[in-house]
Length: 319
Image (cartoon, rainbow, N blue to C red):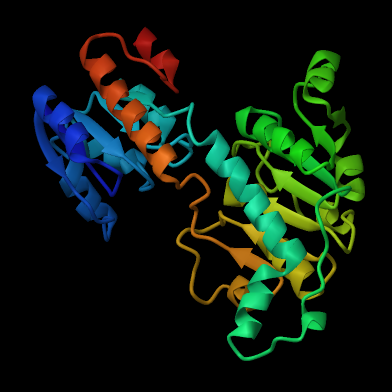
């Protein structure tokens, strides 16, 4: 059994040993420089652990022995699932981790932008200590609009209540019981955009959610509001957001994800002082890394035992 860790993941010694018990292990701790290099890494593997690097149809064509992919994250839109299923490859993900880490990052962005922490930090380094340069706003009493009420969205709602914020939300699956249980008012997207001081996105990337926040939606937001995206970059029309920020039609934005990653060095986002950028690290805490790796390795173990879990292409079992 050949096991390949195809790109960088968090893999302490105890977890390496677990994989070595299962089979012959090879670990790559750099991103592939090309598809050809990636194919060379994985072409003989029976099991692959993968982080952020994409797994295309062409890669599947060269992975003749492949039986299972364990994705070291929740998102799997970078894996060609149709090709995986066609080639009888089980794909498992880590669906139940980092809820707290991502939710807390939302408020790191919100506090930063509302209290102008990034501006204050840059100015104090230049000797500018006049308090009048740094007047911001508190979160208490503001309205936060949470798009999506999955595990992360629910955690954001819970934290928002701790700040004494007004919480509204929109979800694909509304029901009065959820509204009452979460202490949230469920509204349509247009109402959420127009009434929120903070709009935060917590939806998966699907054909229905791709670019769900575009020019028309941004135009409905308050000029004093901020947009936070810790979900997937393509949920937002990045060009429309850049134009909106450049024209100061909203207060600002906190972005952990982008249409293209890594974010190109020449991106117009780099030049804006009303946006806070982080390199897809909302999930990144010591606690969440440990949890993610534990489940990722467990997915491999369960597959080898004949009891695969966390399968994102269950139709493969019928093949």
